[in-house]
Image (cartoon, rainbow, N blue to C red; front, side, top):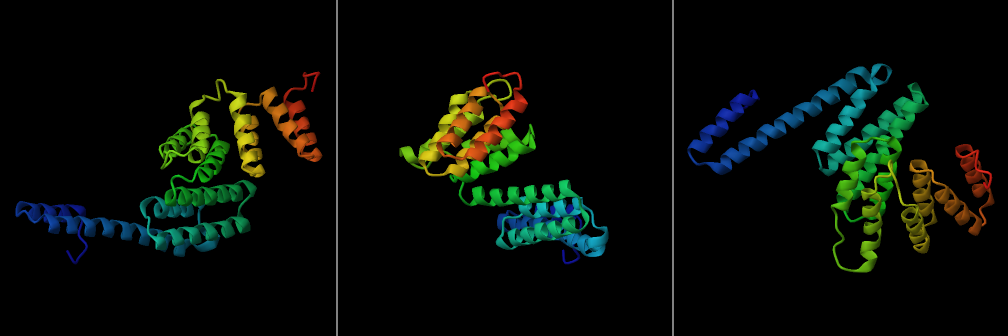
Length: 253
């Protein structure tokens, strides 16, 4: 076993211990085998990054290494290493990449940060909302529903109204099939809720996502009315311009 054998040798060793009812020893061997595979995979990534360096490295290597660390490992040191990888990749893309590739790196880094936040506190619905807005922007039909399901699986810990408000809005927005139909009132009520919580930035993000997905007249008018009330005249002019681009035949607008 000191020679780092193949998987079959490890399995034979485990079966040997199980025949003699040595459950703890078999479990220890499984752990050693798994750790050897993880460590070996990490060494391959590290050697590849060192070999290719900045001039020849491919973005897929960085992304693969980062995902290996963030998905397969939860230890503090591995999380730190993933941050260092994203930092190195960002520097590389700024030197050699185009605008689209740089934006991809930034989005990947933000997704990693949100994953850390919701992993450390699954009831952090603010982090879930920010994460979902980011995912919605990528228009990934597979990842978006899965992320919503993960979010609403985290039921508030106690029966107090303050804990349930964001969860209820989150659940409503997840259940509505926005591509087929939506409820303008849900979006507007949630934005008003965030304003009452003195979080104007989240209210705007919610309405930005709403008109990005649905583009209903009532949503535009509700958003415009909000900016008028806040005396943000530059913002409501911009919203009217977007509204007119989408509905140039609307005489009232």
